[in-house]
Length: 95
Image 1 (cartoon, one colour):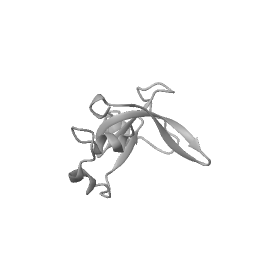
Image 2 (cartoon, one colour):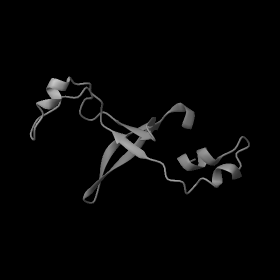
Image 3 (spheres, helix red, strand yellow):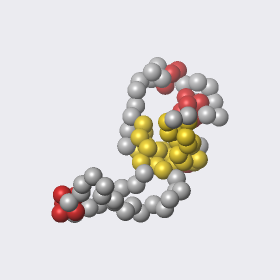
Image 4 (cartoon, one colour):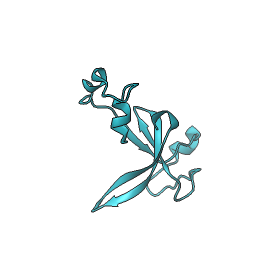
């Protein structure tokens, strides 16, 4: 069952008509590589070519967020000349 189907399924597995009316409402989807806290001094010194070391290892999954809330994880994929994300895991509440 797909993500949208799980969201729309009611307690008996039927389409919840109350949720269907929200299908066309836009919601922000973000993919997050990592977060890092930095001192103002270090941020002021940033310039083109600066490298910021992150905590995630190369190859780790990226966080998938809906309106700022982590809902899953995925890996970067190349689609022709653009990037995308392949969902590898959803948080338990969405499964």
